[in-house]
Length: 394
Ligand code: AMP
Image 1: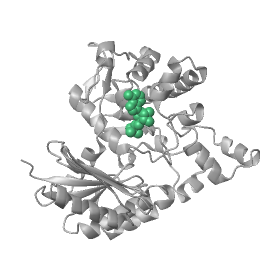
Image 2: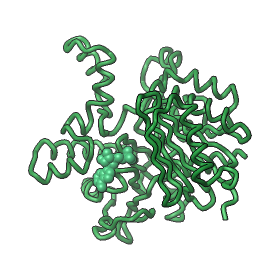
Image 3: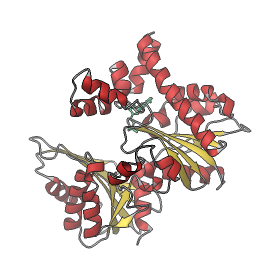
Image 4: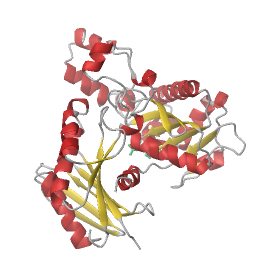
């Protein structure tokens, strides 16, 4: 019997993703997606248990989209009254230096998220639309913002500050904010629970289309690979990750590219996509197996970058007790996990081939018993993490 639920909303520029979560059991009671908002053809999919409703209809704006979602809840269930919704949780990518945890949304919080648009130009305006229509349509429950940057808010100064001119960096608020923090916080907490230890030195690899690494000591993040924006760090589906910023000057001066073209090139047309033409790891592996050298090279670049980060983070923490894989690639790509651990054997990391090769939706250890350091696979669940964080404020 459900006693309380949280409606979690992830509002994008032309989409609204939502999930109705029971924070106590961890179950999603319903979920869905509104797509192509503002375009000629929109689409809505609403799932309630086995019951899936798909609509193809234009959705004028975020307000119309959310109204349609609320209508589907009433018509297809579960009704929000019977689900006893106690809060709405909004995912917000960029919280800058202002939010170190979840906050109840009021007008002041809204204007701070607005002020942060220059640091999160792709995401924050879209979140603001979701927050605005959410507060209007679901006015009698508290709305909570959960920030992707919050977990990294207390990074040590030596990790957060770039060696950029101090006055300029401070004036323009340029520092390491990180991203995927809700996932890194959730997954590192699951690892502590699974291993039954609070004092772990761990590295979490969130490897999806976007990818990031974090170093976590006890409950605190001490390093993370994404920086001012989610461009820095690991090789990603379409993003370069680390690259000498002088490449920007070079492309501008020598190739004559505009700043917007370079932005597009680094954020969308690089990474695995730019190296191989494919951003899906399954396709790249197929091409490796077919003997394509370019695909093998791309995998090696991906693995080399990961090896550098895990090694560096072990050095920063003075040791490593656990390495954990999460997100689309991390949770599903056993071969990549095995190849990375082979490269990191000097840290005591290894996988048990049977454990690593077994598919499962459960959090699990995949290293052999008695290994010097544990290797784990933990499915991330950002919606559940947002729901649970929202509840801490009620
Ligand atoms: P995410 O951004 O977390 O949804 O992850 C999406 C990515 O996961 C896709 O681009 C794929 O590259 C990757 N992925 C999903 N399933 C697999 C799999 N079985 N093996 C390798 N990669 C996978």
